[in-house]
Image 1: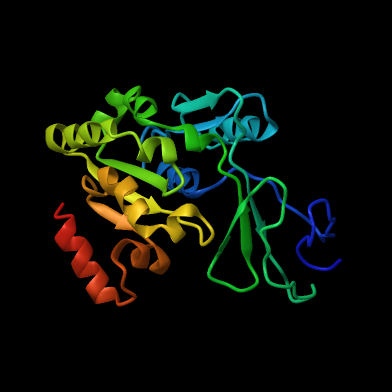
Image 2: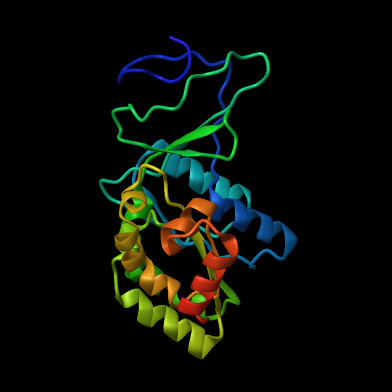
Amino acid sequence: PEGYPTRPGDVVTSCSYHVTAGGTAMNLATILQNLLSKDAVFLVSCIGEGDVFADLIMNKCRERMLPTQGLHRIADAKTRLVIVFTENENEPKRPQRRNTLPMEPTTRGCGRSDREMIATAGAPAAMDAICISKHWNEIADSRVLFFSGVGTLPALEEDRSITGLLTRVRETRRVKIGLDMIVHGDQEGASDPSGLKRRLEPLLSTAHWLMPSEMEVQLLTGTELPDEAASQLLSRYKN
């Protein structure tokens, strides 16, 4: 059949595919490493243990001269996988996206009707305050602590000890904290905005910068009006 699989097990042909290590955190780390200096970036994340994508990430980090000491291998977990569907003008248009694959993915539009993603939760879902605190020395010596994928890190978001750790980083070390949100349209947070706000409160209350999409702003504030949403967030989180 043309387009996305219509049933688990369906096969879709493709002209080509490309496999690489990416994502907001790694892409940003690579850019900063290239712009600044060799030791400008320290990357903390969770990857699978013994799967091919974890090995790919480790190799890419070494290739890009990114430190790997902060990459935690999680037993019985798989590395997060994101499949991005793209089209060119010579390929037929696909039907609307469907969330039908057996690995229970979430789908998220990329701002264009011809580009969609399937993402698995993967090992980063296990990252918590303990993972962060293990690298206190590196964090304390930093100027910026940037969290990528906020909204898809349940272990970290539900760990209330993260508030004390981040407050300590802010107040004693003057580290700036940034949050990049990711909430998928069919994710639990999208159907339960109040629950999402409660879960993210410890992170939101300590952040200097928040980078949400229009949908994520609406979930946090209940309004589609940018000025009103910004006013609510600035009033609630005076950081």
